[in-house]
Amino acid sequence: MTASPLLAMRGITKRFPGVLALKDVSLTLDAGEVLALMGENGAGKSTLMKILGGAYRPDAGEILIDGQKVELHGVRSAKSCGIALIHQELMLAPNLDIASNIFLGGEPGKGGPLRPLARAPMMRQSKALLERVGLGLDPATPVSRLTAGQMQMVEIAKALSHEARILIMDEPTSSLTAGESEHLFRIIRQLKSEQIGIIYISHRMEEVFLLSDRVTVLRDGCNAGDLSGSEATHDRVVTLMVGRELSGQYFPTKKAGEAGEVSLSVEDLLVPGARHRVSFQARRGEILGFAGLVGAGRTELMETVFGVRPALGGKMTLNGAPYLPLRPRDAIRRGVYLVPEDRKKNGLVLGMSVAENTSLPSVGGYTRSGFLDRRKEKEVAEQESKRLRIKAHGIEQRVVDLSGGNQQKVVIGKWLAMNPEVLICDEPTRGVDVGAKAEIYRHIAALAESGVTVLLVSSDMEEIMGMSDRVIVMREHRVEAVLERGSLTQEAIARFMTGAGESQARVVA
Image (cartoon, rainbow, N blue to C red; front, side):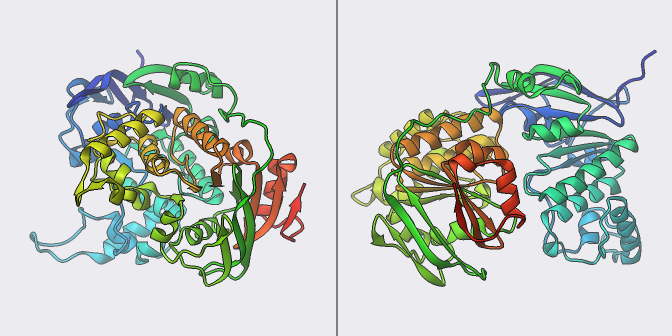
């Protein structure tokens, strides 16, 4: 007789007003197994995991743990069944220390409801849990002082404090450095050896193939297929995800043509917090890539070009005229727009609708006689939603309820509606599925072909090489090298990123 799987979800169906989010979805997870759950943004992955985590109740279907049917009436109920969900946006309280975060809501104490906290046991247990996940920090350390990778380990320690047997990880490496990701992978392998079942959600194929024993793919709220680790290849997974074959890495071929005149010139720019001055030129119709390790200063540079961080020195010109924005509004008035690294924090107003987010940067252009012209707002929002193929119930849907890829399209769409001169894209496809990536790449390439200057910041080496006409490699807040298209190789970029190349901020043809 075959032993029951650790987890079985059978025939899960979930409806929301106007949409069938999940239809008869099933998956299984064995103890000590890493199951990759993949699918395009909006395929139903998050909804399925929220059902497993107790946040949603299914309209149909059943959940079994060790062969026994369970009813999950809420998050606390799921935790009591040994289920823990680690969100992409980490759910920690930065004003509290590590120990307080680990035991938040379940603090040991004495007496009644107003019992004093038993700090000594909290510290002892927290220290043991931190050692288990390889984090040698004092449990009294404030979470606000931790790196993203350290916070991830605290989240895992918190899950283990509830004796979790089923661990759900949603895009766990999206904000981690390479070293932090490697540490996370070691912890995953350790947890696997302890017979903990892990559901791993990621759009990074190399991670999936490295860690997973099986891959379950969802498409449009339905099961699209299930592959063993040996069967899972890039092409097979992508075909299941999008329902068709996508060639190559989906990078569009730009039309051949000479680079246009210089549109943005940056000379001896001193970015707040940097020790070195930066100079570069970007041309019309060019996609100028910016590569570098985490902390190299790329985001800070882009925020200075956009006016978030006013420059401390140097000069910039835009189309030959002086340009030195003191705030983002100054940049927007000149046609310089930023798709930020953190779309939820800096790119969107989550409680507003698709239409409201689209019109927000230029709301003055939507007024008539002092009143907002809702008809014009609707027309533009529908135009951009159609152009970018945003999957939503309608332009009145709140962006907080959209998938990550569709939220990113809204950020891009609001700037496309304003006809940019320079578009800065900082990690434009982070946390975005392969199908949405292909669409975003296509729109970026089309913008460049129309004469827009694109500054592309990305930590994805294939993305930088596949999209860029030239690449500026940054290290320690300075320009280490400028690589022309003909010299773009991963080895060359990595050499200058790490300082192994000859540091002279030179053009490498």
